Length: 470
Image (cartoon, rainbow, N blue to C red):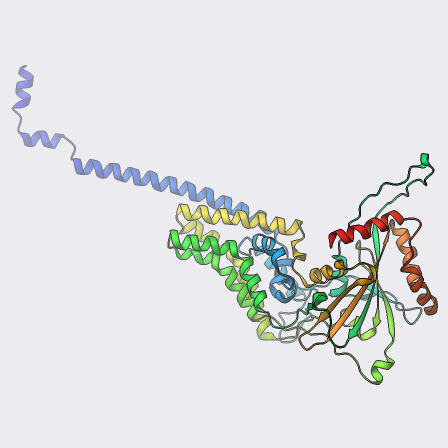
């Protein structure tokens, strides 16, 4: 009791000095909370940065130079854009992901081809400006023909025929026990394609006509470009509306660069006009054998000028140094989008925005892998549109037209003969390409309605499947 009485006798000021001040106490707690929050944020940022680096490495391996071919020639690669391609184009074509490795590979090819040397220097064939198929052809007229060392180069019709689906169905073969012949062994189903190219005057069937892909990009092309970045636009609008952040430009930039590229796209060489007068009379009909590497056998017949333009000049870029520099600069910019985004995410973005950026990069990487392994590079192209026209017909009725803006038209008439093995295909090819031209005419007229004894079932099934596919 005496101690308690003595304690109460102390001045109030002394007692206040011995107790910690309330303001300093709360300030210390706030500093500790802020430090803990900064530490947690730093750890989260480090994890996101590490995941972004991993995604950048994995995604860069998925991206191919094909995406820049589509960028540099939108008239061809979106020529068949329609309702059927809306889902694929809208989901699998973003260019805001890790494109840096594909961009570097594309620029390396430009340098190797001499495009950096100066005006009108270097070769565009074999680069993203003008793809080279690497396929060879052999001209058979006049006998003995050429050596077979000439190249198809870009080969529009060759690529179109390679895209016609070869879908066959099994049919029930007669049983040997019931007196029927044993089923023939089918090693590899294939097809022998015979394509006739010719000039056309006058009106043609619009349902079977494909407009050329060398003019100024149309409104449909620009619409396809906008739709190809629809996912990026949606995310960018969300970031701009929710965070009101200027980092939303990372999602809008790919579309802006695509539209800029289409606006300044390089002009291309168009169809040749039909020869007239003595030149037309002197021009001979010739046959060309093409090795399509796994897409069947192909023979093209037609006037030399009608056929060889697709092996040489058609679609080749018309040199323009200013437009070339713009396109190369756009490729560089697209290659820098991911590194710049990763740097912004690591240094300046808030944690929530970092998660959004990382999630989009993961989506873009998965889209690039799907684009690569589903052969999405072939979607919506001029070749795909020609293949659709051919697939609608049956045998002699497989006709497609290619028409440019001036009205020049090339007609392609396709005949397909289905075979059950590579050896059988070679036999059919020899009948189509005999050494003597007179025998060739007779063989061609006799061959088309004939059915092979070795693969009768395969041919009938293939024709049925083509009708169903159409």
